[in-house]
Image 1 (tube, rainbow, N blue to C red):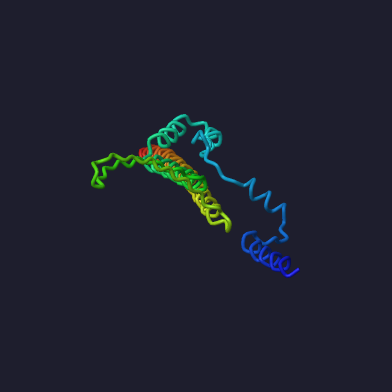
Image 2 (image 1 turned 30 degrees about the vertical axis):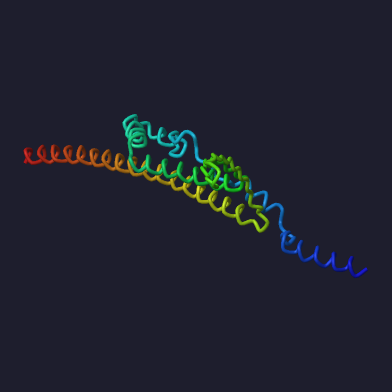
Length: 195
């Protein structure tokens, strides 16, 4: 009986450290959070909503925005940064997998009765059990950093498109004001000549 009690106590102590504590959690919140994963768009023009810019009915504006998106260095940097964060996620996911190392060790030994050649082919396999969730937490952290980088890329696209659009609209507005001023000057000259 003492043996059984000691086995139960050892098993309960071991399981209390090895198994995560079970808590009441809201399953709906967890499902909602999993659905809200961010992923970058394949077509980067989805970020800037070209259909909204088309509502201005100005081909020059659309062409300027498209050229700015295609040729801006900051956008290319943000896309490369996003790719590097994705590679960090892949590297961290691979840290959760088992590793196998192999090698070749040639050797020459002389024990007094002649030299002998020895060869060794060591193979090592290792795998870290993720009992406390350290590796899965690191992977989730890297995935969240990747999602942040995707949102940064999206914000960069939107800010470049809005900067180009607002600058173009201001230029068009100033051109219209210049035309109006020219008309006003012509009318004032006519009024002056009539006097």
